[in-house]
Length: 165
Image (cartoon, rainbow, N blue to C red; front, top):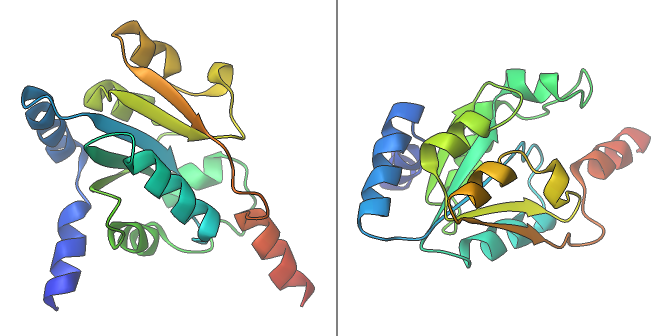
């Protein structure tokens, strides 16, 4: 295993370690940004979204839906296309992503409670009423940011295009 692979692996952390990381960063008054998603087939829209999210704070923590969690979201029997470890490693290779935690639940609410982000970020296909954890984050003075979608990019559309070839 090379040095690059070791660095990637260190960014993928279990919940217990993530809680310690978040607490340490809060202690030093670092602004934590949190987002989550499946990130099944990584595309330009994802890159734009994650870099934009990271620009809002000192660190970006990403909650990644596990394979089982993706299945709970009714994205179809063929999803995810890429297994959770492969998705996590692709995301961990990005400079803008500081830590990744894979979660099995249908929502990242328990991670959001644990991390207590300063800023909770979701894409433009959400509104404040549909963002899991928005009320919680706002209850302690945190902010919720909705990042506009980069038009023309969608994992579902990519899959449909591939099926039609």
